[in-house]
Length: 218
Image (cartoon, rainbow, N blue to C red; front, side, top):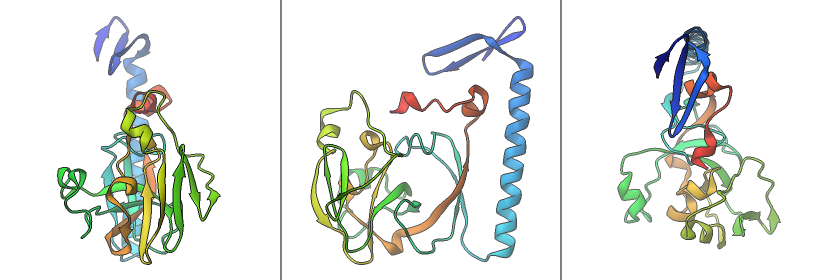
């Protein structure tokens, strides 16, 4: 950002916004962010004080959950209860059957964030981007696909049917053409799931512009 008379210049990637926001606007947004962060911290501390479980605070580094989770969002993840379809979970992707897969080796030691799609014992398949659970199409208002994906990503929109083993879960990112998930590394055992998402804070860009700049990641 640089000063231009009473205005500031905002840069987000190749996009430059001029003559729209002042330093006062930036200060107001900063105050909102501080208030939101303070409220979130208080809530997290209260939860930690009254519930003796494992909580985790992290930021979204990947675009695989856009637009549900914008890049740089701060997420509060709580203890794992009964895992249900639609839950957004934090987990260790490494299992005994996928340790040699390149994506697992590349992100060795990194915990992933994805959405639970298939439950134990269910049959899961994909046809042209539509997920079927036990032959029934799954309603997924959160899922998005790119307009110009890489060819191999288009191929990932179709997947042969698998049956999710007992004690395991099939997970996917909401940003389907930018997500390495169970289509790549297989199902995830229950013991690999460490936390479930409670809520998230929007990024500074989202607060300042009134929206998340997710379109550049889709």
